Length: 446
Image 1 (tube, rainbow, N blue to C red):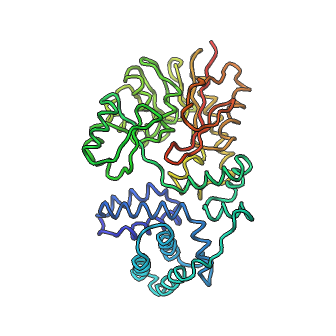
Image 2: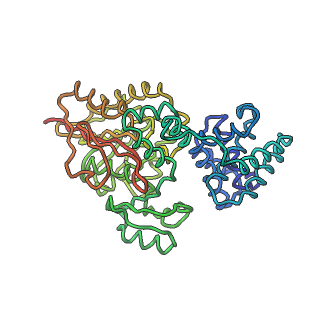
Image 3: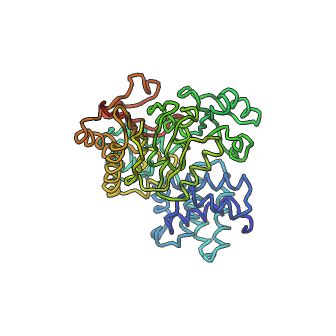
């Protein structure tokens, strides 16, 4: 263990690692928390600062560029990110201005760039004095610039969404992406009912309520410290978004069936399938990497599930002994439907990523088609909003596989805000609702 660090110091370490090493926000934070003797309060502060700074990065940099006499990129990485996280706090949190500025200056003084502490102090105090005079693009006059800068999304993605959804809907979507993601649980109904879980959560002082969307889903005001409770250790729930839960319901697995989840890690959808099957039957859970298949097994074991067989293999080359009743293909994708939950994705993705991912999705769909028996079904899903990964992928598949047809019950997802296409369903992220997903069910003719 290293010595304790404040929440702001932990946040700075994370932001520097994300920028320098391309580290994923959730992974670097978990590593830092494990390596330091930080308090729960410090971990919560670090998480809020890191995710908030990433969500508002373009806006923050735009404002800083007006407060600096040199280019922001010319500053050392540590100093640049001290300014970013401090400005995020000044923009959005209830922390007192004095405390934020003072802590930022102290962080610089403790670094090897102590000589720049005066610059940091001057920039942040300059913001407090002159924030009303700083220039932002006007939505009515410059909608693209406004959405790109004020809502901190990459310009190429904003342009795509405006072409597809229009300016007003894109505005709403970007605003939702900059809100904290809602926190939901899936009750492990193999062990207890949702009502019983709600009662036990209330006994631990969690503000929990039943979801109106799914019978096993529970909404929480906060998930802080949830995984350290005895309810977690007992396997009473799995942390999962409501849109993600919906995918298992679309597959509608039956007890005794043989099913494969081709891209299964970490096992959320796999264990949900097993739950809906009453832990009767067989599920092959595939992933390329041993540490990920171990994670599937760990999650299944914690939940008391026995029918999952994790396999470390490339799904594109796997062949079971017999054809399957059903296949779940939750395909690798750009993740543009979950930007509020993983804000660092927006700065990682490039238009060229679509080409590589759609090729992989096509190969996985081709493989899935070879695995199901006549009358069997495939559920294809992504957490992307991009048509190349979703409806266009299914159109192409159906042209070359006429033995399959889309089969989604009319009643499915009626209670959710969604767009129903001939090829499937798109959920757009909703405030206090599910993340963004595409999903469809393909049935093979007898």
